[in-house]
Length: 176
Image (tube, rainbow, N blue to C red):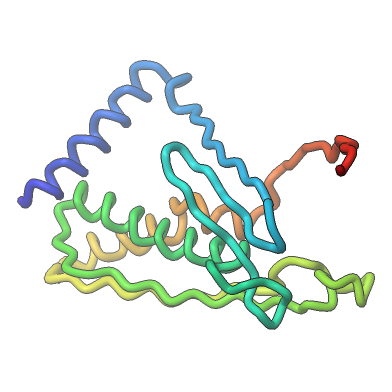
């Protein structure tokens, strides 16, 4: 077992053991913030990471980064890979590569307020996940498929409505 795989197994085991000992420790909060300073270019802060999001030129942006819906697709693809790698490590399945292709269909009439009957978000998302492995045990491979389909947090977010609350506030400023 490689050091990386052993580190994954150790981390997963430690978290699961901690949850069994203290179920409240399973509750986690993730945060992100963003500031739009110019045009459609957003500066996103997640933990100690700085990301940008922009729109392509065809949608009025400067194309300096992926747009928000592309970031969602990227989050889903990487989440699939992480879930598979973590469960594969715990199951003792050797994975040499994971590749995820994901596509989201969006009808711009919803975003641009051209139609009241078209939603502004994805109308559908399709993905294809390919797991390269030396494993031949069908039972382990089916377990891994189950976990990829049923334990990926971003897939769950895309498939199921998430209760969302928030506010929109205005701060009036005087321009000089």
